[in-house]
Length: 287
Image 1: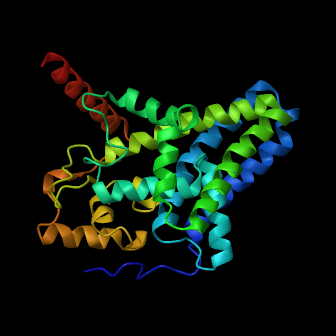
Image 2: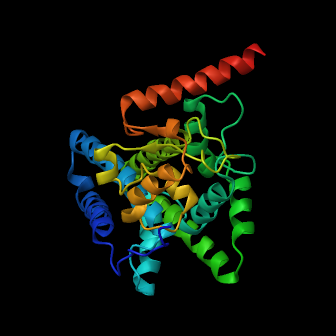
């Protein structure tokens, strides 16, 4: 079986490069915003949304196998990646590993509600941490097992919320535009959870998630399509996931019907997710 982190480099340059693009974008927005007309501002937010979505793949990798091995750099990247995605890093770390413990089944805080539509799920999860955060904060706080982790949680909330509030106070149009972009981006990120577990079964180790063989998606999103392999071996480096997927298929540890060609971000898959959730909502209403 593929060994965890066997191929992890000291510096994961592809992931670092994607994050550097966000740092460049954020710097340019801070410097140029006041001199831009509405058109360039809108274009900047659209580009920011795309970079945020891309940086979520980096954040996800970093939580499992750090993209930088030096401790100081790893710590800084945890904060800046959280800021890029609008997530308090330590809180999202706790949230995400709860997801891995329960695999989108009972006990998973992010599990869709029975009969919940895809749109409602994505909007609910985008809005809840900002406007009704008490339960999520309670989960995150209880999930921090050490004093250092709790201090990091407080710091991470200060980094994300503090930066946003500071921008609203400094340039309201910039702060509010960034907040709107974060909400849209986080709704898009939560959609990925629905897409990656469409038709999966948390009670069956061979059916925890869907695998996408999309060359585009796996090339540019660091093999994120190999989601069944990732759930079974979450500490395997992203470069090793394709080989692990093949191994699982050969050994019967991955249901073939949960293998698909389109990417989760392909319009056909998005439509399928929406239709599946709508059908579940309809059947629950009818019953």
